[in-house]
Image 1: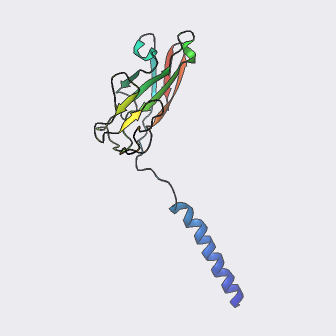
Image 2: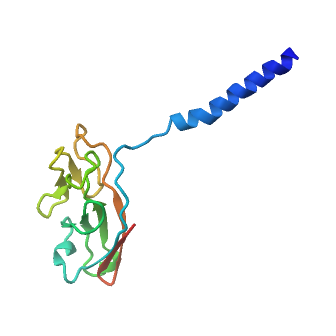
Image 3: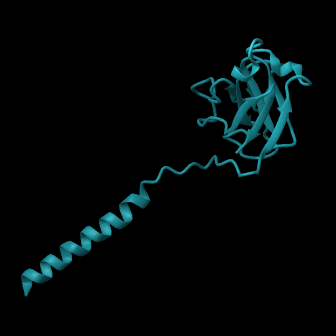
Length: 153
């Protein structure tokens, strides 16, 4: 009977260990950007600023804090082969609609006015290793068809 009690205690300890340890080691992000439905179309023949490699533009009425559309590469011969990245403009350190990453002109960098984190739009990551933000900007799906950008989540 003592042997069965010992086995039962070991079983209970192992069960508790395997049930609670995985939940306590979760990598939770406090910088969660709230979900907003995104379904936006941008005509590149009308918005010619985005048809230049390295340019970015802010669209305030989409996403949680607006969208930053960045043209990584524009192929004039075959526009459907162009590469774009689309980010939510909300800073990942100060998750608020008051802390919106602002593009520096038409460049591939943007800065948060609240915590001064500078982001690179080709990767979405902060450029400085000592920046307040440690996570990249939230990225959205983008496809190019017939010289139009289709952005969604």
